[in-house]
Length: 295
Image (cartoon, rainbow, N blue to C red; front, side, top):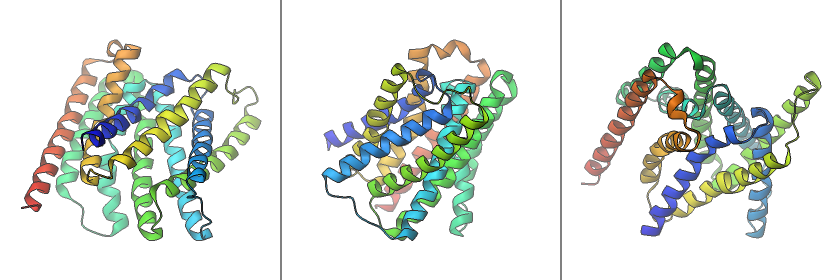
């Protein structure tokens, strides 16, 4: 059990560090995400091939998974666009809006009543974002793109969950086809972009290529595999709850490695406080509800 918790928090730390690559890698967000998806898909296909887990699937299932992958890819482009327009901390803060959007989208798609408690708690996050947006004009474009990124990820997570329930496929199979679908749409986008803007750099330099390979292997496939291993002895509830720490890890790493503490205003810290309060209250209530249900 102890090793499972270590794997879980290692996966969260690695996932939290993915935002740092938006600063480390110099190419723009579109080719950055394309190479991340390409290398990750090739690596995952290799691992699954070695384990004899590559199987032909019905085209309807493939289309649904790839459709989810398109949403994931566009989310990543917006997420890293937000980081490049502002900074890593702003991108991570905006990602915290996923809970708010999901609390609205999931009941609509699932055709059930919304949880007013989730909506009210998520509004704390919205207030935090608005506080930063209203007082720190330097990062408004980055915040707007970051909010779009969160909206797209909310759609992705809700639809991906429904597709997995419909198809009954393993998470690794889902991820492979999602990466493939995302890779196809990004390849088309890069081709169109390079024709429209010939001077744009879409081929990474050697230092970017090394960073992309590390990004795809250790920081994309790595967290996913560690999370799957931890789920063997830890409940999905505990895993999902623990992932609330991801934005906190990202912001902490950005401030330690890039000195971003000096780039943000007092309004940023006020916004962060509201977001952390929302996460803390949601965590306490979720644990209380879980314990009450087990009695």
